Length: 101
Image 1 (cartoon, rainbow, N blue to C red):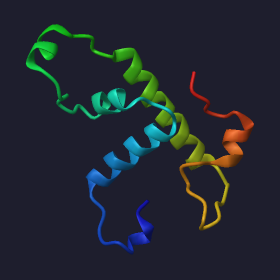
Image 2: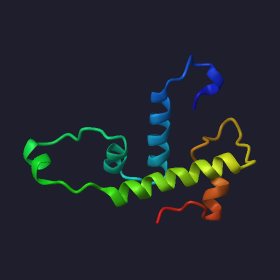
Image 3: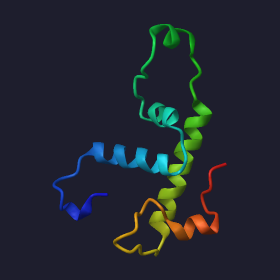
């Protein structure tokens, strides 16, 4: 993601974006990703006034999926070819590791 500094300095926002992208690749819904990032949700004020579900379980599952994926990355000796996205992890997907529940 950071291209070894070839695209300039990275910022904490890059980590946010990378985490959100990884959650999306893991099958987490965009609504839950937005809530994990504490975004103010679009929509009518009436909807925001009446709908107060906190998505705690959904957010916990999303953070757990991301944490499991990061643990797999950090503990892996898997070397991906330059043409392959690190997001795909084909060896892990084929083995059924970190499949969404």
